[in-house]
Image (cartoon, rainbow, N blue to C red; front, side):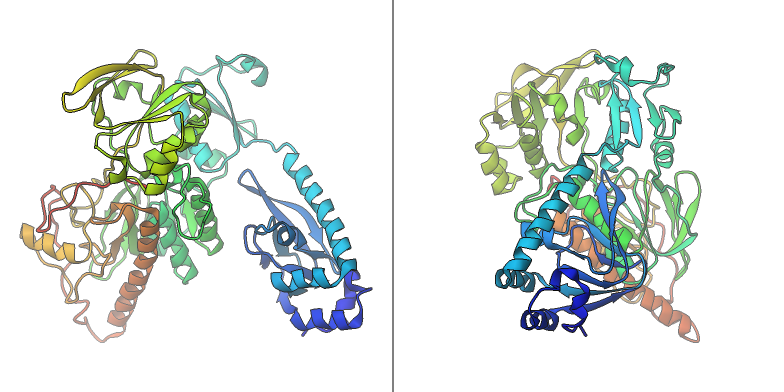
Length: 598
């Protein structure tokens, strides 16, 4: 219990009258931590802390890298900066040794300031000093982890920059054709015929590296540490990240694997303003990295730059095997498929040859500066297209949305429609679609058809961003995992319908499949990859968290079967039958894939 005498250890309170000190003591929480425990994480709701004993380190993230920027010892206090500025915690606090802290909640802290003028003046002075120190630390140059050397119109260079950016790896980019480029490169640097090069902070040179090689070089984890897990999450979009957070926070050994970077399509959204709990909105990248850090905090093992090429379903009640791109595999009791969707490709003449050289899928923030002063075009009428248009409108001279339908309101949230209408340099062309792409070394123009008369028009441009629809890349799944006519994974009741419609076998359990369970017991699907899902970030997060509840049910079922004398009714049966992966309609026709959006 905190007492008024105990608070005399804090020099700040030495001259505070006894009655006021007793009031503080009566309202202060008595916090005891061991070495290594976190008192506060950066971004959390702050409190005012007075350190009665022990030492703590102050952690601050810069460019995706966490650094120790200071320490506090007995008698020190902290937390007044975010409380007075009205922000979340600007740094994390971690115990260096066993410690004891008196903690005041925000309301009590503000009441203390109002009632004690001496403390008010001293805390204001301390805050000014600490804000100045934070500004100095933030302004200090931080060495990048890598330098990418490659030309703007090189697709491989674009991919490397996008990979590093989305994984929050600090880097610099040098275009050999740009003025002054030679001065920024090592004196003995020679361009590679293989493609773009990456120079790491350690001096290592990588010519045209794969994502995995690059990830290893900059310190990202690419190899699972264990051979067996309770649950493996395939894909780290909103659904996969939610499954990872809930799985590890509820005590399951959890592995999450992602082919490129956390966030999926949502991670590339420039601004999501309708996500619950963020009244001013946030970027998809910010939301993804917060979830990524949260999952790691709970103990999820996060692996990037790895493709999953197959799943070998286990025998009844046995371990499933997830096969990685190198042929290695990991075993797990349950699998959550959260691979999301990919942008639908432009099937028009000239498009494939100009990808990365003026034609782009999605709207990477790294390309925003490249649109300055240009007339650019975006294809799509969903939230992702609207968010991209808002982003590029601050850089490009004009942004034109090409929409095949007759109204933006059909696929875009009202708030985005209104925001676009207020932008003078954003134009919308309805009943319009691209039919041809022109260019040699780079995009030069697009040809569109408009209106019921399909009037053709050539539009000069150097930038075309396609954000149209979605497709599920599920061809790597085993035949036993049934999908709908568009490749989306069937779950729950739909599993029974598709098995009956195809006459390919029966569900191998006496119970019905759980709501998010696929045709293979213990393999679940969540988010955009699931048949019938709602293509929204919040829906993906909800399904990801729900999937872990069903994983628990499944694991409890296995445990009950193992503890019984013999096979129980729940465990009896054969492995789910091999079902043709050939797309075929189910009884309730699958809808056309909705446009992905936030």
